[in-house]
Length: 69
Image (cartoon, rainbow, N blue to C red; front, side):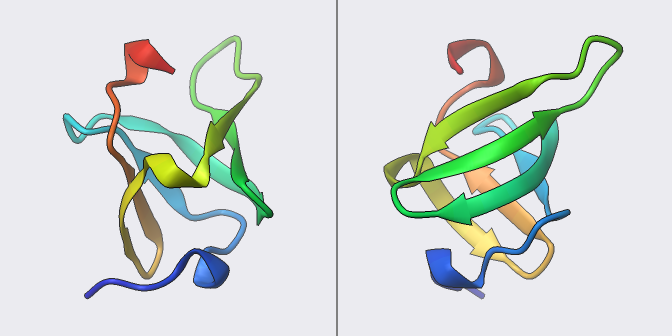
């Protein structure tokens, strides 16, 4: 199932092109996603919406590797 950018909700899991979990969606508005990174240091990253490869309920896949973000 593929949904549109407008359906992305805060708290959804974000994974990279390799299937590795990056973090969770904080906000999805305009031309970017704000993602709270997993891990001890955490922090936020901003990913352009054109990097979104697939959207399923509760999960967003980015077309880039975690290290490239």
